[in-house]
Image 1 (cartoon, rainbow, N blue to C red):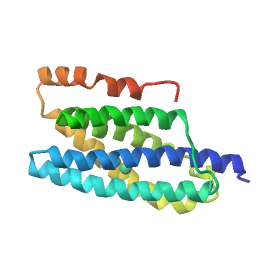
Image 2: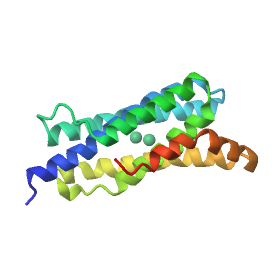
Image 3: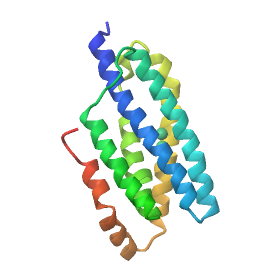
Image 4: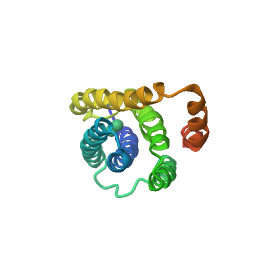
Length: 178
Ligand SMILES: [Fe+2]
Ligand SMILES: [Fe+2]
C-alpha cells in the first residue's frame, strides 16, 4: 500500500519539474524573440507552448498529491532559481548559443533523465499520469535533440569556446547537494 510519505515524495519531484518547466517556457519564449533564424524561431515557439502544457501537468500532479502544501522549497528549487538567473543573464546579452547549451542541452537533458526515472508506483495516481509521462518524454527528447543538432553543426574550435562560456551551466548540473 502507498503511504502519505510516498505521495509527498512524488509531489516534491513534480514540484521541481513544474519549476523547471516554467523556466523552460520563459527561456524558449525569449529565445524565439532573439533568434534570427526563422526555422529555429518556430521550434522555440513550439517548444514554449509544449513547456507551458508540461508546467500545467506537473502543477496539477503536485496539487493532487499534496493539496495542502503551499510551498515546497527544496535545494533543487533553489538551484533552479540560480540556473534561471544565468539563463536570464545570457538572454539579456543576446547570447543565444549559451542559452541553447543551458536550456536545450543541459536542462532538457536533466529533465528527460528525471522523467525517465520517476517511479509512478510511488503514488496511487501514478497510472493516470503514465500517458502524459510518455508524451512528455518524447517532447523533452525532441527539445534535447534540437540542442545536440545545433552543436553538431559547429566546428571544434567554436565548441571549445562555447563550452567555456557555458561552463556554469555544467557546474550547476553536477551539483551534489540537491
Ligand atoms: Fe518540458
Ligand atoms: Fe522541454
